Structure formats: structure tokens, C-alpha cells
Length: 371
Ligand SMILES: [Zn+2]
Image 1: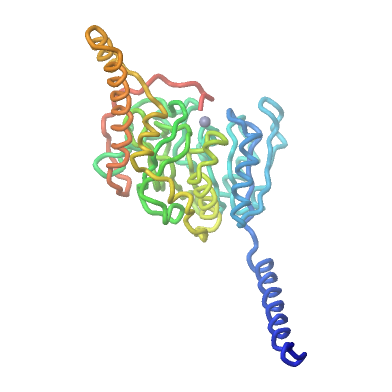
Image 2 (image 1 turned 90 degrees about the vertical axis):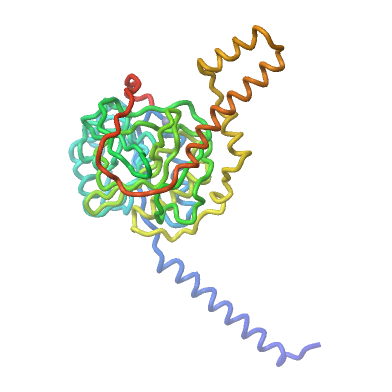
């Protein structure tokens, strides 16, 4: 049995631990105020009632943000009293694609970003407000809403450089949702520690966006069906304000992809503070681009073109059904794999250069709110 004297150091140790713990708790609560974030929603051609709570939870899960939501009146209703208090926040996250905001709200928003407020553009938020020049400057690139060459160039990737392509044509298109590889173009705090390429979950891949694209830095790209690399993550400096623009996040499935989660958390922190304190997510590092992932991508979205149909028809005249099935599978995989391969083989580089590249004619304009 130990005597009361012998146990005294133990009690002193416990008391010391308690004091240290209380100090840590106190310091944690008092010296690291959270970043104030505001999500704006209320109208969107996507289900904002579903996705805004997801965006809110993602931000809150980082432990860095307190998040409020400003919801506008419904489409077609009186907007005149919608005036979010942007100035109370460090970063605004837009999940909005709908009717124009009233003049006062637009002025407040431009003042907020100009003075150094952070802004995060999520997916269809870059379809919004095509006739608002400052908004187009702030988002850098946008799609739909009647946008065309008058709004600015496409950004194209040629021989390791970004080229401003002024070819006339509409802005904004995408195929059906599918998983696709994303590749780093330029190092940035938002993607620091990420692999050079990773698989993004099933999502829409926006293509052929265009806009002023001034003070714009592309972080990551993905190859669209056209074979063109498309910017999917980029940042814009607008006066003193930092803007993080992700074209990703069509719906809950896409927003569940670990890279979407991590880039939203880090992008919002960067937009608010100019730095990223969150370590790179291990979940993103585990999003591979090995052969199984490439096969998954290939099988995710098989497409049959004229070439495939012709080959199948020719073979059907003289060969048995097993051969035909094998040929079809090989053709489908080849088609997807070659696109994926192109994505992964382009070497990273930086810098936007001026010039034209003579794009082929664009597809007919798609509908205003079809994104
Ligand atoms: Zn979408």
C-alpha cells in the first residue's frame, strides 16, 4: 500500500494537467476566431435547397468557419429588398444562378470584393449575371446566359502555354456527368500537397467557358470530350479581393468527392485570408489515376461513334457474335482511354500568353439555364 505522502506527486501532476488543459481550451476558444462565411442562394437551375446545406457542412467541418446563408426571394418574385450584408463576412460563397440582384446589392457586392473580401464561385454560379460586367470580371470565366466572344476569350492550352482564343462562339457546354481525372496545372496553396493528377467523382465537366479572364491563375484542368483541356479550378484577383472559382459541384454526388470537399475548404480559407492552414487531405491523395481508375472512367461513359458503328457493321457480315462483342469493348475502351491519356500526358506549365489558335467552329449555343 502506498502512503498519502507517496501519492502527493501524482495529485500535483493531475492538477498541473488540468491547468494546462484549461489554458489550451481557453486559448483555442479565444485566440482563433472563426472565419465568417456567407453562402448566397435562393435561385438556381440546380437544387440549391439540397446543395447549400452540403456546402455549409463542408465549410463547418473544417472547424475554420462560421457560416450564414442569405436566401433570395424565389425566381420572378420581388427582389428589391434582397440586400445581403456582405461587409459582415470575410468570404462569400455563391450557390446562386437566377434573377438580377437589385442595384444596391450589386454595388455592395462589388465594394466588398474590391476592398479585399473573398469570393467563392461554385459551378452554376458562373452562369449567373451575364449582363453584369463587374461580376464577369470577378468570376473570370462564365458560361451560358447569352455569353459569346463579346464577353472575352476561351482559354486554350497549347504547347505548355495558356492561349487566349478569341474565336467567335457561344460560351458554356458540358456532357453528361461522369468521373474524370483532374490534373494540376500550376502549384497554389489551395492544391498544395495534392497529387499531380487525381480522379474526381461523377460530375459535369464544364467546357468552353469564356470571359475577361484578367488576373486569372489556373490551378487545375480536365480534358473534355472535345479533347480540349478545360480549366476546372482557378483563382482571380479583383482589385484587393481574392476569388476562388470551381466549375465542379453539379450536385450532392460531385460535392461528396474528397477533392471537391478539400478544395472548397481550402479555397474559401484562401479567399478569406490569403493563406491556407489546412493540410492536404489524405482522402485526395488516395484518389488514384492508376489503370483501375482509368478503366473505371472508360466504362463510366461509353460512347459509340460512326467509326465504331461502321466497324461493327462490317464485322457483323462475316464474323461470329463473340468477336463482335470483343471488338465493341475494345473500341469503347480505346476511345475513352485515349482521352484520359491525353489528360495525364500534358506537362504542367504556367502563364497566360496572348494569341489565337484558330479553333474549329463551336457547337450551336445551348440554352440559357441548361448548365
Ligand atoms: Zn450542373
